Length: 552
Image (cartoon, rainbow, N blue to C red; front, side, top):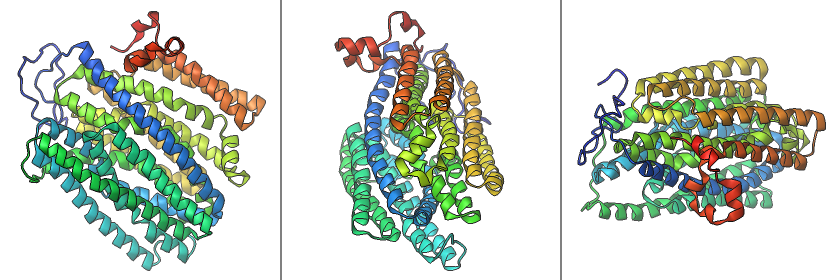
């Protein structure tokens, strides 16, 4: 095995592979020469990924709207003490849900796609069986550990009802992890519409229904937590049943005669470990701060910090939507040794993510105070500072694209693992030092510092694979983002506009950034239907002069 990692890579485009060359033997690229694919083929995978991801983004926006209604309803209904206890429990669940799958929830889509390409049905089923068994075993262990700590009084942030609330919410961790496995399987084998309905229609509507019932009946926060668990369980059960039918079709297509399972072996866990550490970086940065604030300060501070989380995490809506189809698409390209397709997939996707995420930054950074007070009321006005600080880090996370996944797929396992561990250490150290000194403000700063350090190291690592650290079109867009944010911030200080005026100003900035980024987005290539609409064609499609600035 190469010292560089599990899947050593030799990037040699000068020696094309002859027709009929068998697939590569690893789950990433090997030292075999790389084939040169036609430009049309390169663009096809990128455009297909973007089209499907746009449907996912539409679903994200729909779910975001429903989620906003749910969040505002909860925050306004509960007292600050009750909401702080709920937020503390959900932060614990978030951390557990990242840990118990051991990174398999982030690796399963790649393995399912690769084994499907190889027509290896037993190992395909083995991936799902391994992940499900891991989640159930560690989920039960985590639940027992939480119950033990609660019984000993080791976990208590404000009273007995807080502890009972945590015992109810901890059930969400294994349900959420299993649900992620089911959705990832649908992303690989089913249509984007199936994932759209499950993740962005059924799930948020079930949560909203549970919230409306609890608020309408005037029930306690413990009943609200119970409603969340029931809603998650119903959504998972429905699609778990549908998954069985989907797998029957997959096995029939692969000519598999039985449900024979072959465990994929240690390769699955070796691949998943860096992904686990990557997930731990973001989850620790976002969840450890509120947990420490709850232990060292008060639940009111936790409420201030977590109330704006649904707003600040809007910066990740687009990247999360695109990531659903990115992993299986990239896996298939790497299995075919299509490096031009990989470059196209990464940088074109990064540009789209940056441009589509900018509206969130344009509103939450310059106009944070009016956004928070309009949505949650004046009692949460202090949360505006936390929103501004965290928006910077989460936008950077989104705007650098899937750099970590690309390094992982290219075989730079050691680099990815070391980078993740360094960032994890930064997250823990920054939270301990900053929260102890500055409370909730320190937690917000720790999140941003961690994400900036982590993504800086991952972006530097792109030099180790044949993908430029910074593509020309992307550099122009990043400079545009910085300039527009400065202009909006100055405008807010001078005019102090209302929420409605702030939305209009942010929309103008978004249009300006789109005009700057249009040559690299290739809207007419991704959505050729736009060319049939004269007005839309002039607005959205790149000009002939701008075509030369497109990605290679």
